[in-house]
Image (cartoon, rainbow, N blue to C red; front, top):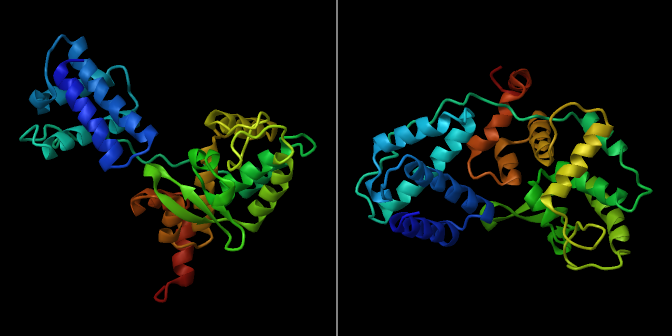
Length: 299
C-alpha cells in the first residue's frame, strides 16, 4: 500500500471510530471495501493515489471486481463503503470532487428475509433437552432472540444488569454502541430465570455480569449461537436456511402482522431508518390489504 493510501486509510479509520462511533465490525467492513479498491490498482499495475481516483477508475474497478463476484448485494455493499471513503476525503478537502457520486448501485431486486412460523419456532424449542446442563440456557437463548428481536452480537453481550424485570425491558447495546430499551416477554424472562439457576452452578465464571456463558464460564461466541440454532433446526426437520438472524426477522414479521406500529418495531429493532424496517411490510401483502379494509375509516 502506497504512502498516500496508508495515510488516507488511517485517517478514514480514525474518522469511523471516533467521529462516526461505528462498531468494530462496521469499521472493519468499510476498511475492507476500500482495501479492495487499492488492491485493484496494485494488481492492474497502476500507481494511483486516492486523491487522483476518477469516475472512470471506479467504473473500471467495479467491472474488474464483478468479473469474479456476481452477487449484486455484495457489489452494492462495497460501493457503499467506497462512497463513504470519498465523501470523507471531500469533507477533509483531500479532493475537490467526489468521483463516486455518479456511480449507480447495481440493481439487486427485493430479497425477502427467511421467516419462521410460530409453529416452527415451537418445534425447535421442543428439541431442547432440558435434562442437559446447557438445556435451559439454549431455551433462554431462543426465547430471547425471538422475544426481543436481537442481533446475535447484542445477545452474546447481554449482561445481568441489562435485565429489568419490574419494567419488563432489557438494555441493548446495538450498532455504533448505541443503547436502546427493548421490551422483553414474560416467557423470555421466565426462561432466563430458570437458566440463571444452572448458570450459578458453573464451577468457574470469568465475567460475573455476562448472561450467556459456555460450560467453561466464558462468554458465548457468535459462532456458538449459530451452531445451537442450526442444530435445533435440523433436529426439528426445518429445511429453511436458518441463522440467529432468522429469529429477528420472524420477530419483526410477526409483530407487524399482528398490527404493531411500524415505527415502534423500528425502535425495538434499533434501525436507523424506517426504510430498513419497511422490508417486513412486503412479506404479506394480502395481510396488509386485509388490515386496511378492516381498520381504515374510509374502507
